[in-house]
Image (tube, rainbow, N blue to C red; front, top):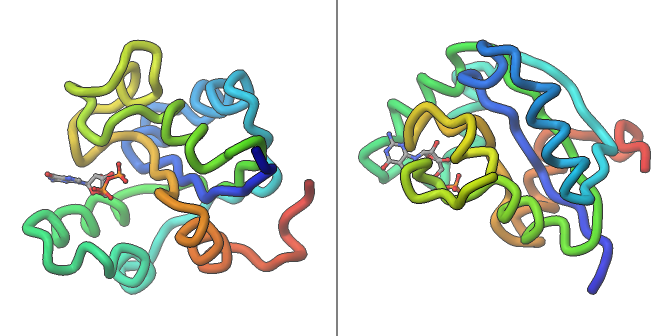
Length: 140
Ligand code: GDP
């Protein structure tokens, strides 16, 4: 197993409820280290580009509107098999289907307002990290 990095986003439903610390605690207890983090408001254009892969999905416009509706916290998480580990800590996309003890089970409001984003492969993780962070902003 290798040390990897993955991109995480704490979504507007979670920042609105002041859950950044509670969610970060889940990452750290799961063996993931937060090696970069910043809070920002996504522009419409940035949210559209980040989710361009979903442009043909029926929920795309709604997802983009949700993601610009409040601050997000973008983060780089590092650890053993970080991509898969983070997906495990996050839980399934739909909180109704997420396992007990996962972030989405415990905090998500809906399948859309599901509190966190996490890269789904090491390849996408590298792209998504570069989308938000310069190398100099990552401090392992
Ligand atoms: P993820 O990798 O688990 O985040 O899931 P996806 O890549 O499939 O979807 C990206 C994001 O789109 C999800 O995290 C949700 O915020 C949103 N989403 C996914 N499926 C649905 C859906 O059926 N309806 C709505 N409204 N949003 C969805």
